[in-house]
Length: 548
Image (cartoon, rainbow, N blue to C red; front, top):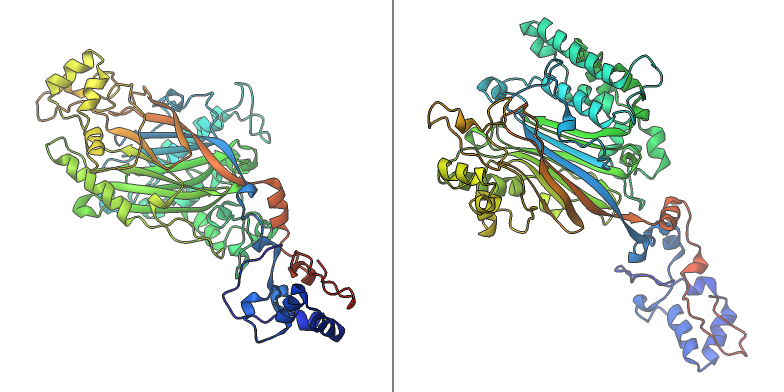
């Protein structure tokens, strides 16, 4: 077994292992091996030449320090990620809106991870930007996404087995009805008692949801308490429970119960769901959720979020982004959901460029991995796989008349040549090194509400008319990622159409043999294993041989 050289000064342990006869025999021989033994027992030689370690150092060495370090211990596996972005124009789903996410999330998709980002889940007025946030729109979207992703395999199936009389659709409908009723019955003072997002998301998250924030590295790391434990360590599961802070938060903020009452069955059956909520975060109108198959959840860790406001005064959250960082097995991911500066005047694209550059510069994730020699990415660009989604607001640099003419001809190539984001990327001013799949769908903005007509066709004045544009985009950065599809949904719920994409990503995993070896962190290396691997023979007359 070969070991790296130590930086610190180290004495050999040969004199403590071999007897005096061995020393004398070594002195009598002229073989090179005898000098090797002599040098190991002599303090006059440089300590670094000794192949031995002191017994105290032997006790401190663990197997995990030497395992899973070679490329052969890593294997690659492919996973499918579904991404969608949708500016919903301040509209909130209700029981009567008949909104169906099947319009853009295919029922047969079955991706491993879903990242769904929204913009303007509330109107971007001064009240929503400057005062306490109302999380009811987020609650409605979570209930709707939950119903879509955890749909039964067939129409008659019921995943909530403990209540056979409740179907999945009826549960979701009851949730929407309760939300409608509770909203209409709340008094004006109830704004200070509304549920927090932490309590709203709880029914959809895995039971041990706090483990998602911790380190799931396979190599043993030094830790001060069980809270720093890895996913692979059994102690993490046995000791981790919901904190009293969470319990107080849930009880104090669920006075109205408009969420918990609506999804009681979902809360009671979290372990039976196909998909669990991994992370969700809201900043004014921006809302991002990450869902994963329940069998993947134990392999997800280091979940962190970062919010950057780029709105009013370059600080407020009516514009900006929410970034989610996480690791899946040995690979790091970052998902950015953004809403950039609006406007179709000449030069407005430069403001959007600045938003992107500032988001990349300022975003900083907290450090949660305490494994020695390992550091989780704290900047967006440092992640292995990065996907950026959102209403980027880049427009088409053509007049309304010229754009409409090309639209009627379905001449997407001519339109895309005038797309601002395409132009700015090609010039290297923004998203340098990023990729985007070619667009084969019509511009997603701006439509008349509940209509297939662009708003410019019905606008009463040129001032209110908007030139159609591909405002809603998905880009990616990093190796090991390939886009499989890029399309738009056709829901008429908003003045934007949703944009979706599916990706095939390569994820690094430790092979099963390495997992078994690294999981046994209490096995120590014996002193005989630290001796040189080659056989050093001394004079046969001395009868001494170094043990391998």
